Length: 503
Image 1 (cartoon, rainbow, N blue to C red):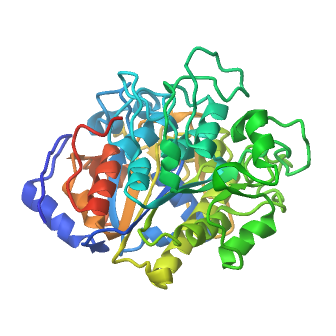
Image 2: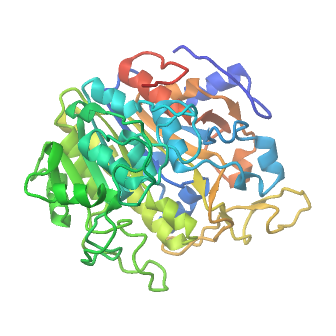
């Protein structure tokens, strides 16, 4: 395997050590990937994984030794300096500045280029960029986006959309539903106007008919508790005109509209197999996280909406109809929302659903369903950024920043404390926003080893910082643009261009 090492950061590993580390990683399988499955837990950091592991009493499937593991920096063009290991180790507040947002993070992962915060597949020179998924549609693969939040929210919208502002939800949803948006950029965003925002009349050419799955929340007729309320905003599904169009007997662009929980379950079980599914669960903001808070841990869930796991299995059942393969992004979007709100219980709840979704994908590939297996499929599990600056509560071990031998809140990095399965771990949020911390990336299948050829540096103190006891995470890290280049190389069998792809 050809490797091109670029080492930076403090205490950089030597070439030989990195090569040996790469050889030690399991789960790497060569060969061209027919299918690409990118799974993103929005807002997940190392401590999100750890806290959920402690509550459930078991590790997630992607934490196993059969996955390649590297850390990843997540900065946007707004922070060209990126992640600095020495500054992180010396200052508890370091990562609370210079953070990316989901729009720019998704753009970097999907296009291979850094852009400014808030823009979706929109370059620093104000031009639309082709996403990896759009490229794959042009190459004949089916594509899709699945999320536990609105399908027009930043991370899923970046699969198919292009806009100068992530907040132009109606315009982004319109683009996904119709495959183009004839806006001229002169109309200010009215919230529900599908022509608001700017994408220079971008024409996605209906994604060659290959955008087969859009699933998420955003229903215009149900509230956050899944209760019928026709007065809820419909901007997340393209505005009133689009929503009326897609709820008619003949939905546009060949979509089959799926709303009911049972209908999602039928597709997941293979009892129903539509060609194109626009799945809008009967809830407005998120599947679960935004429901009414009963002021207790793990409140009763919305019983009338599907889980992300069910949506994942349904999406696979639709996408694997394509003989040429598929590329899909599946997002645990509400992990981020829970971390923003500093809801430890709901963060764990959302991460558990995300973990179950990854487990469903692993089971699908283990079984070789429809001929799809680890030899022809690349699975990537990662985050777009960390949210909440989540650390331990100070009652256990810690990384001693000032080296005085005692824990100092707001100075030292406390490790998350295990209180046993079924009990909330000892953990505390220190922010309600995104951070610039490294996030974990796990990969398995065709091309997984390619990540080891894109290491840009090492954080030698990573294990001590988080209390990580996993030989897979040795401090080596990649840039988030590497996700694009690895997916591209795995899919087409060549190195991705270093200057990204533009339309």
